[in-house]
Image (spheres, rainbow, N blue to C red):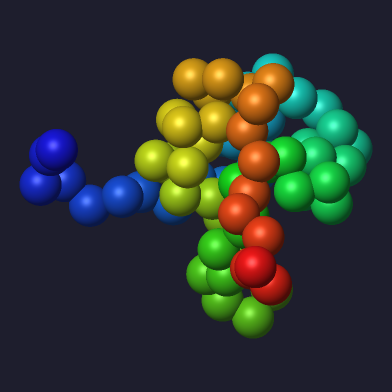
Length: 69
């Protein structure tokens, strides 16, 4: 584990790193098969770099934990 803080990535960077289109990314968010967004400000969101890295290790089996469980 490093002592570096977890960076917040904006959508352009996330799309570049994952190779997904914007519509596919939002479909995966809705299906809970992509890391959830982090609110940066009232009208601005991003993703934790560590979450994107975890997703990239095996995107086919990635699933967000069910918060209701």
